[in-house]
Length: 408
Image (cartoon, rainbow, N blue to C red; front, top):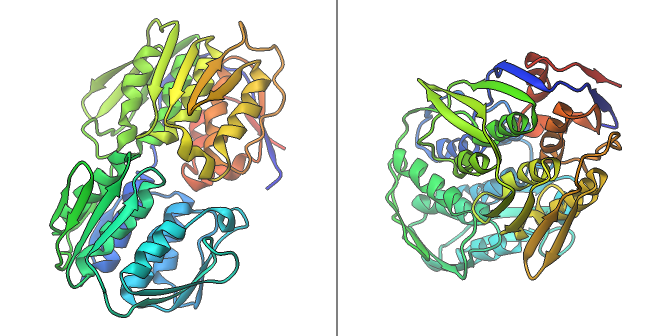
């Protein structure tokens, strides 16, 4: 990529955000469920994020080798899908993807009778998948604190297993809203799913195709909350938002009420308005890790001391997001200190007059989390096109809100 974008300061924001993307998390799940239906489902408003476009293409591909690129959800969901459908494929990804662990999912699928080989390093992609020959059990135990995507992948293929599946979740369960999202979508398509505190039970049976429209993405909406929180003046409308959403990231409404943003429903839209913020902030991100970078930047920029827990899963994302945050927040004079799985954000009294270019580490959320600083200073962000992974029209949205952007 190796491009940069110059964002010119704009501290007074007013208007309606250009159409927000549809939820990538929901889109990728309904695509897998549709592919497991006996006949095609009718899906509307699928996300235009690269991860979802990639998922669609790979599900339809006749090639022997499938490249999941940097899409963790695609890698994990396809691993399970290919196993249960018996499609003999090689599944690979970028260099970073080949360093992201997948052993827990592969071990679980092997226990169900799948033949899966590691082509390079044990426990990591690329994989050669031969399918499930005979399901030897209908009960699995899997850690609940690593990635909910492993659990969702197993849940979605479970109706196709002869005896269904019981998944026992060991220890603390992270990102539970994503497990609940998966279960809700499966039920809409006819599956019998029960989610308990430490287990998931899925009965055998066929999915039933139906018409489904994907709702707007709360993760994408979170960045506009950050713009509102940091601007001098803001009156921002988010169009077509579902407050009673399947998405766990809807909790950004509650977080930002503490950080200076009030949410007011206006029909199917939401109006974001500035209110006074608190002097300190504390939150457990176990169930909403994708919001952590955005909130950390807001706290650092507003001189709000913060205590965070539940960030452990950030180490195995597109980059090590904890390390990336520590390095980039330092450019604002802030520190993110870690001790015993607790993180303390100590802001500087004020944001420096000049901010060094923000490095994104090829992580879409790093680019979008730091972009709202343009309400306070001119800033430069490296590799801006990483946003295509989840929010391809993000920079267009900023233009529509009155920002001057220059690519170089």
